[in-house]
Length: 140
Image (cartoon, rainbow, N blue to C red; front, top):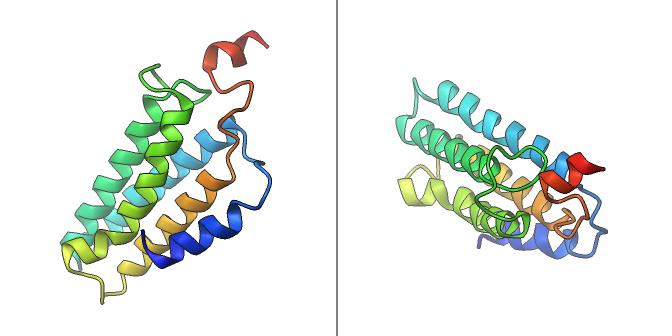
């Protein structure tokens, strides 16, 4: 995992778990939207960065939609599993510029910042929240 993500997780791990499942879903969809927007903006000047952004947006949206929590569309995976995937996504997003050979280009900053943000949100989310499933949330 890149050094920035490790630093974010070290700091955020000491903070209280203040992000609820519902807020986490909103942040995830906003993150996916930001990736799709950046994919469109990068398309003219850097196809590799554009495709990486679109791929990351699709992965983030899919992870959110298949999770059993407020904001999920189907109940394929638990919210706890979603958190584990998010942790892996943080590292994958941050290393995309290195993997696709644009680490020295300005677009790389977007991926590093998004990776750090995903790591921070994951570290501050309460994955044991009593309303982590949609059925429990809707019943309350």
